[in-house]
Image (cartoon, rainbow, N blue to C red; front, top):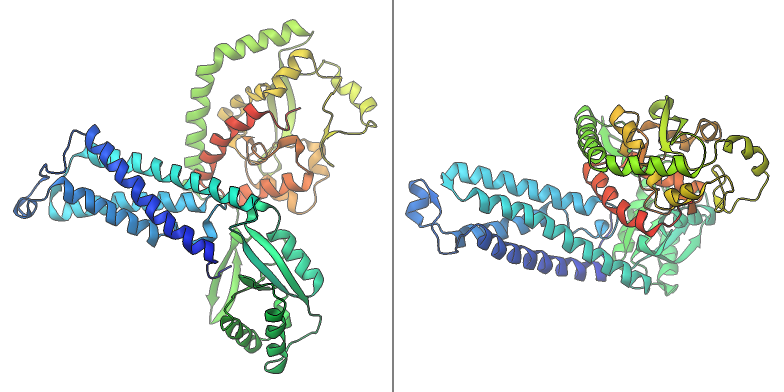
Length: 476
């Protein structure tokens, strides 16, 4: 979806330029101090570097200008990434990587030999500082949106049922950044150029809604030439224009526009990771899981002892779950229920649920949970043994929630796509409410992860897991 910036977005983008520049200037000053350099110190290098008298002042200024330019060039200040998903952070990462390669290329060409410590610290600390600044910027946007400000206003054109469907997807929360200001119900099979379009645009103007963007919810209402004229007329108001053209049931992230023999088509991308991405994800899983197991082994032994002393039975609980591509595996957890919990389930199934959702059976005060088990669940430490599953390759650190076979039997079409990825010890569902989520919300978050995976999204989810666990929301 492409559209011109709302007024607030242009102002915010200008503010980001100043914030990025301020952050990098501060980082540069800190790096000069840490690397024991001065702006007046000469940069080592070949004849050309010596002849122009290059100093660290030149290097500092060059870094600042090129990095800020790359942040702009690679789209980190586009309105469609503000406070949405991980694209903004990925753009900052790409700009930082590009900065590294630009620095290496220029240094090779002019035979400059600046301090490697200066370069490494500047890139590393600068990247962290930019991410921190963007995170603060997001918090500011969300605060403003909670006050009904910094929103992009939408006006829908099409059949009411289509308008409502697209509106429900876009205006799903305050943080989405969209607000509906009106709609026009059109049910004719086709609109024509000329008078009909002029009347339609006039109706939008007279509505008093003053939208930032008009969305055509049903593209078949207009032939190509009518669509072109409609877009041209809207430019004169002026207002941005978008067409809802995503096939139902297919994520936008999986679509790629690609002309074939002159015909415009949308190709649907497979959700599977590339070989390189799978290898990178697996390496991160092994490194972090093995490291965590070594560090927390004494804690796990203590928890296992507490479970055994609290109630009869084994310290660990084993259960069959469904993994990637529907393959069954055995999951490991600390036992939090009495050993006859499965037998008691039949008596509890008729009880009204006060947690979980339509598929997952949960009770906030489940009588089958032991005293120690209640504490373990509250702090989510009952899941620590799943690090063993991560090491064995059954699970990943981040991914969809590992379902029971009985849950998979109740899946509908879209839910099956959750099985395209390895289940995770944590995921978007974990940092977004856990058991407080509806079944539909849980599936939507898992599919969002599966279809938009990136190394940075994994890192962000892992970081968000810590406050989610400490907050204990949705943990029963």
